[in-house]
Amino acid sequence: MNQRGTTEWFEIARRDIVDSVRAVQSMAMARTSVIALAEKFEQLDMTVHQALLNNLVINYCRPFVSNRAKDGATRTYPLRLVAGADGFDRDIHAQLLELRHKMVAHSDDDYLDARFTGEAVVISKSDDPSSARKVPVRVGAITIALWGLSDKAVAERYRAHVAAAVGAAEQRIHARLKDFFEAAVEFPTVCPALAIEDESAVRVRGTIGPGEEFTHPMMAVDPAILIPPVGRIQRGDLLFQTLKVEHSISGNMTVRFDDGGEITLALVKRGASPPAGGESEAA
Image (cartoon, rainbow, N blue to C red; front, top):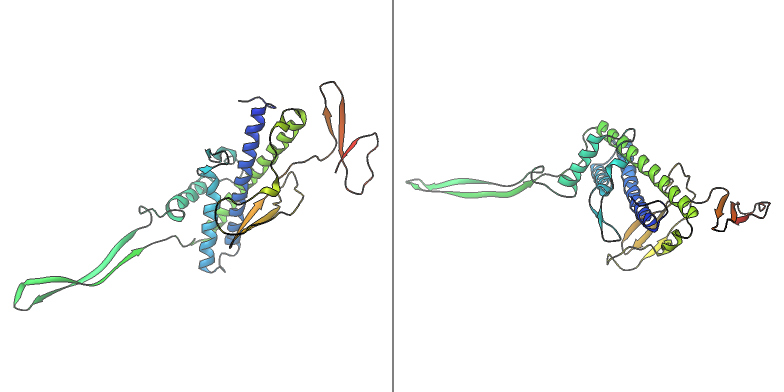
């Protein structure tokens, strides 16, 4: 294990934070779908019902299957990070993954039958039984696909489980950001060596469509509760959601130097009087 505060530690932590926020965003989108599915179960048109269920399954499962990261490596979100949360249901987790693998993202013949069908009649000459032959009168095929849930109680179980998973993932990412932030203050000569990427440069990669527009609202995030500051990217006819999670200075912060000197930074609300004692201001 890399020692806290080393360049390697910061790089691994930074990569983990980015991957974890991506996982949180995906699971949070699943939570939005399952809340709507559970709360409006009896009123939903089956087309909307199916869309919400598919969206729930795909978004919830995405972090737990292989995904290619920015560095080219293939990684999955570790189940152990959320499996211990109160309300986490391993049976529901396994069921959602099975739905994803066998019925939603793929169509597995072991689960969803598909077969060729038809009907034929036998025709023969009345005086020559040996002339009998089958003549098709109908041919076709029949398939089956996942449409929805039959019981609201199942939707409620899904909702409780997804809420538990998202809550655990949110708490962990805030703790991870806090730890990274504090380490960056403690080891200032190491952390700045890592490139801090410009958030305004977030883009949809590839050739999905012409044109692109990026907007991202600035919103406060309670360190204990994730309040998703959602922005959007438009690429041609498609809209993409962005999620930003931060940890920043929330009070006085002391930075110590190798020669024994130190300086204190104090967070001051805009318009407030600056702190006494020559402290620096971090707005």
